[in-house]
Amino acid sequence: MTKKKKEIRRESIMEEAARLFKQKGFGGTSMRDLAERVGMDAATMYHYISSKDEILKTICFDIASIYITQLAEIEKANTPFIDKLKALVRLHIHLMATKGAEVSVANNDWKYLATESLAEFKDLRSQYEKGLSKVIEQGIQAGELEEVNQSVALFTLLSAVRWVELWWRPNRGISLEELEDTILTILFNGLGKKEA
Amino acid sequence: MTKKKKEIRRESIMEEAARLFKQKGFGGTSMRDLAERVGMDAATMYHYISSKDEILKTICFDIASIYITQLAEIEKANTPFIDKLKALVRLHIHLMATKGAEVSVANNDWKYLATESLAEFKDLRSQYEKGLSKVIEQGIQAGELEEVNQSVALFTLLSAVRWVELWWRPNRGISLEELEDTILTILFNGLGKKEA
DNA sequence: CAATTATTCAAATGTTCGTTTGAATTTTAA
DNA sequence: TTAAAATTCAAACGAACATTTGAATAATTG
Image 1 (cartoon, rainbow over the protein chains, first blue to last red):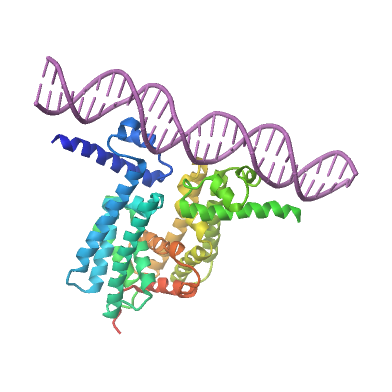
Image 2: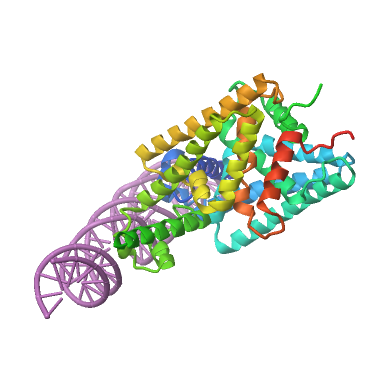
């Protein structure tokens, strides 16, 4: 029971840090800022975390691990490739909607990781992109997807979805489901009107 | 003739700053870093620029002004709305390919603008988004575009294209024209295979 | 209860930052 | 050539930063 308390404080530091980093950037956020938001003295925080760098590292790698785990799960499912791809796009939208701050940090502030972590993070990222790319390749070969350049398709999908983290909030006129469906429609059916 | 020299130095500071800000972020770039890259002492730079903030401001507003000017031009052309939209998407891709560093700064580091500039920048941004949104609205009403949520379409288009700045380089297997065409195909026709 | 351990924070450390100063040097123009 | 203006840079400024120290206080445990 008592063990938890330290854990909880640590997590609340991480959460607030993610929110602040998203808002003001890693470089623009001071430990004093953060401490104030969490409601402790800056020095006190160091009983729960070991450094500012560690916070960034934790946030980035937690998100990376979610993406990689989910990719592995979707990869081994027995469904058409286009459905795998759609599931992955939904995953991205969903994560941004539910873990917006953390995803934002992993997307935008990873470049402030220390040299070693930076290399490792880039590695994970490239690993994930390769997996996704393979799904696209297979989808094209199976005739489920248009024969467009694989890399362009990959990055366009990944990118198309990134605004969600900045814009979508629950109860702002559009539900998460509707959001996912609309984006999937645009990306897979196209924005141009089809003949009736 | 002599007037130009100061101008040229100033511009080379701006260019190198954009490259550095893109690479390490505004907060992660020091004036001493920048000075070294430009080949002068940090103090010397202050004869050409007035502050680090001014550099950021110049880069951000130069880009904003390009976008807004081009939007106005495309708006008044006499073409179908879907073509206007395509032209705007091409504009984004083109700018990222040719002015990658500056666009990256305007996209990612604008949040470090000082309070007043920040407000003005957000204003320009929202003005641009409103203009683009209107084109989408008209396109849907004219039956040229699928009837999807307007805001979702707007942000998906703007976002889908942003990876170009990070990834595309000339002579890396795909030409700028091919890149534009492929992205337009995905966004307007969809990635899913159509029946023959 | 006492003893141990965890938690707090005021104060200080050393570093890096953006920017200024002032004197020296180079360039320009008369 | 000489006076004025532009350009350079070593040195220094004060501010902000991440982090540590050490002593005080609170919570836990035997």
